[in-house]
Image 1 (cartoon, rainbow, N blue to C red):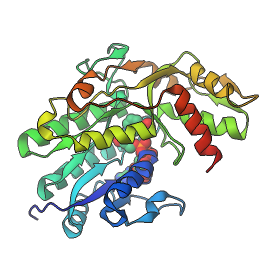
Image 2 (cartoon, rainbow, N blue to C red; image 1 turned 120 degrees about the vertical axis):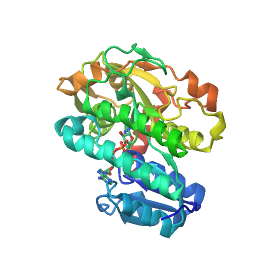
Image 3 (cartoon, rainbow, N blue to C red; image 1 turned 45 degrees about the vertical axis):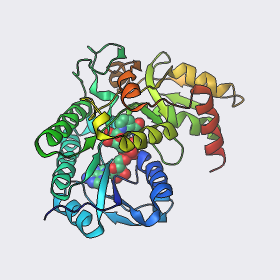
Image 4 (tube, rainbow, N blue to C red; image 1 turned 180 degrees about the vertical axis):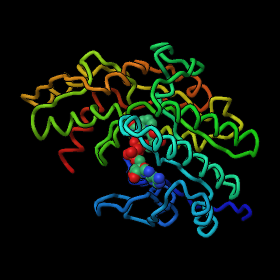
Length: 318
Ligand SMILES: NC(=O)c1ccc[n+]([C@@H]2O[C@H](COP(=O)([O-])OP(=O)(O)OC[C@H]3O[C@@H](n4cnc5c(N)ncnc54)[C@H](O)[C@@H]3O)[C@@H](O)[C@H]2O)c1
């Protein structure tokens, strides 16, 4: 197959937490028919991805990705299919296969079809020896397999750019907080579950200690950052383009619980750490996003207070 670059956009892993919001935002920009949502599973019938084309696609199927891109005239791929940290640590081999294998498949298809690629990284690239306020150039020695797959994903994106000219970009997402789709089995899932539990049960049992502090963002900010990076001129992006730190919020589990109890009368939270505490402890408390700020001028709109207001409003009205 030889390269053609179309105007359409393809999203892998589109039924997940980020895909649900990203597909909607992309369709608002490009029109419903121009954004092809794909996933390895069928939608449950309630997903917003149903407003336009949807195709079952396994990201390990390089030829399948290339075929769809050629036939449909796809020019850009947002590669979201992956196993997240808590799920990935339960099955490290599968995590490597999907996260690394899937990224290779997408980059190979991009090489053949001249695709521009968005492939997200994660704050899980950092390990216990990174500074607690993690800088862009901090050492990357993750202790989770998930984190290793993200370090490899960044290296692959740089390699395909250097060797084949594939325009691949990525952000090291922090924990993302949203209400339209459930989180996919990551260590920061508590920061989403707590809202649903507060409104439904008035109580939450949190799986990390109260003082656990992690970088977080409201989903609208993460989507805005993603689209801003993809809109940026390639020549303005430096060597961090495969995995930018971005400016994030940073709050403890207890501060989040307190912000909710100020708004939901009678809400209580217990803290009963499980294995995910270890993963959280290996990651930074906060992120230095100054390189992204200086190269493509992005900063978040939501703080903890407005994020909590939006989550409670969104869940209550959905
Ligand atoms: N959500 C977060 O807080 C967060 C934080 C940091 C990084 N990220 C990264 O962002 C990306 C998307 O995350 P998410 O939260 O939307 O994940 P998610 O788990 O909610 O969704 C992933 C989707 O991928 C699909 N999938 C799994 N295996 C597949 C395969 N072989 N082929 C095709 N699809 C497959 C799943 O069905 C699922 O719908 C991932 O790379 C993740 O590592 C997410």
